Amino acid sequence: MDDNFAIQLFEGKKVRFVWDEEKEKYYFAVVDIVQVLTESADYQTARKYWKVLKGRLLKEGNETVTNCYQLKLPAADGKKRLTDVADLEQIFRLIQSIPSKKAEPVKKWLAEVGAQRIDQMIDPELTFQMAVEDYRRQGYSDRWINERMRSIEMRKELTDEWHRSGIHEPRDFAILTNVLTKAWSGMTTGEYKRHKGLTKENLRDNMTNVELALNTLAEVATTEIARQRQTKGMKESRDAAHAGGQIAKNTRDDLERQLGRTVISSERASDYIKPIESQEADALPIPDEEK
Image 1: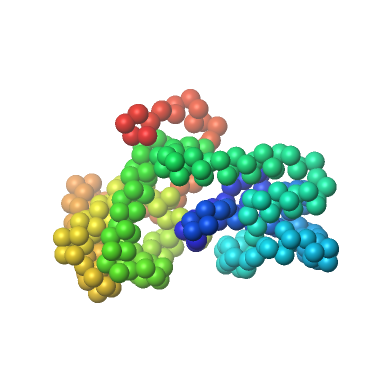
Image 2: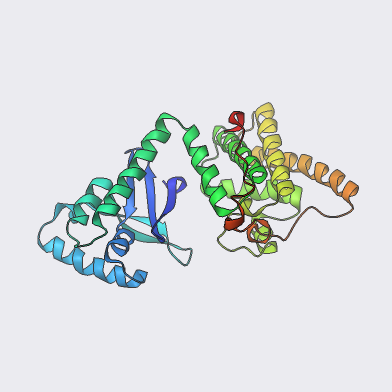
């Protein structure tokens, strides 16, 4: 379920949730919903409120609380901690136990979140469209967004190929990604993030157009090499990842010779995206064939 973890904002407050593919259900962090409903100024206040409420509901034999369980979700410090979660039905019942003027707006918002997922399952293209709009709201250019969308699709093909090769553990995916990234950029993903001054931010979301294109080339090349070789296991997959990364490195070297400078940038997205308020004047729609 880790891959299906997400965060959405409700009136400026973060609400963490996870989609369970097997059960086809959303599970929301209860304390996040409590913080919204109680309009608590900080997370700790909401946590204390939930602790007291949870104790009272348990004494009453409330099934909603009894059936809640815990998942490891990222906390504010970036570490994953066990957090009480509840599905949509349980959350709706819980809302009834908390007097709040936010109750109806939250119910409507939760229903919309659930409806979005159903729509995405029927038409997966909607997931991409939503991602495009999210990137636009953050101020990314349409050119960058197009490249990012392609990179997401290519990454998915690569991970599918790694799955075919017998790679399933997150740690092994990270190792192979490091091999590929270091081959073309000269840095592991961790080193690359430090080069850009990143901590918890997504590296690809902070790459320039050129960096993103080279990274995508490395992943596409790795996918094709792995298919051709019919790789199996970590050793063969590592060799393919290094070969794919080397192809992108050769392209990088050729480009840098022409430019007379490195294309590996220390810039982060916040250094080059336009302020949100300046986007409306020159935002260009994505052509229909690229949506």
